[in-house]
Image 1 (cartoon, rainbow, N blue to C red):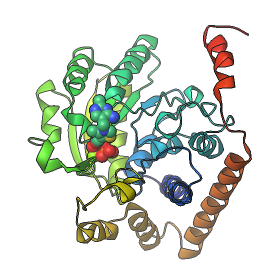
Image 2: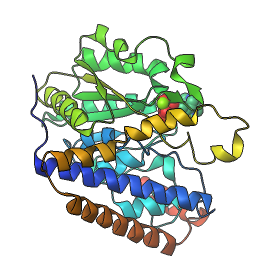
Image 3: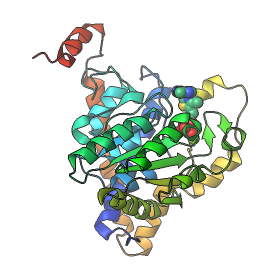
Length: 330
Ligand SMILES: Cc1ncc(C[n+]2csc(CCOP(=O)(O)OP(=O)(O)O)c2C)c(N)n1
Ligand SMILES: [Mg+2]
């Protein structure tokens, strides 16, 4: 099955999401280096197209599980920028009351079942969500984002196996950014990642993850396949993280693990610039409309930062109330 590409409205919506993700993370980077954040952040700057292109097809009833690099997935799935920023700032007004931080942003009401600091863990969690969706029989799906490093975890094999055996409505989205922490893929990953899924008989696609339209189309097909009872699919999206593994690495590493030239080459392939150029060339909108969308994102980021700064820092006093709530108390 092939899918037509996104409409003009869908393309603009995707652009808006991508720019919001980029600008939110640029703000986090600045705030981290200014010493304003209580913890580290793993940024997806350069990888926004995968989150936006996939989540464009999902509703609040569909589920996503994410990674330690999860801000983009959270925002693309419709998570609130203010409460995400407050979470990253460790404030009580955060989406997890400041108890989770950057690596654990989640909002069940939006089908965001969690970012996750355990590499690969989201895969099995997604299989559980997909199993629940299958039992519900309402055509809902679950999507798992994970990295190239995570594809070396044994849980991938287990999840590929059970999801294909039980024909779960699930989509595997591997964001292959070429690095696992400071290790280039070639030093830790054997073979082609997409080939790991082929023996299970599921549809597999390998795409340019910095081409938002290509991501949108591949996701449309995989998600439609899952919704219609066809079972899981696997997408390997080739992309690149422009920032480091985490923001603190500039203070920690004694020698660089990648060349500036490589980073510059990928800057040319920036998914946001490419989508903007595509929109102008194809008459979807003009430069002025892009400037306006960028300014909107700036305003939302400013609002989110103000909201986060105004909150009270989360402290241990909050814990008993959270335990009471999770035990089913009023
Ligand atoms: C089970 C487990 N092993 C190791 C780590 C340490 N760790 C954190 S991120 C990371 C690299 C993950 O690489 P990849 O899956 O490619 O994601 P990326 O950081 O590139 O987005 C590692 C090894 C961890 N958090 N969990
Ligand atoms: Mg990686």
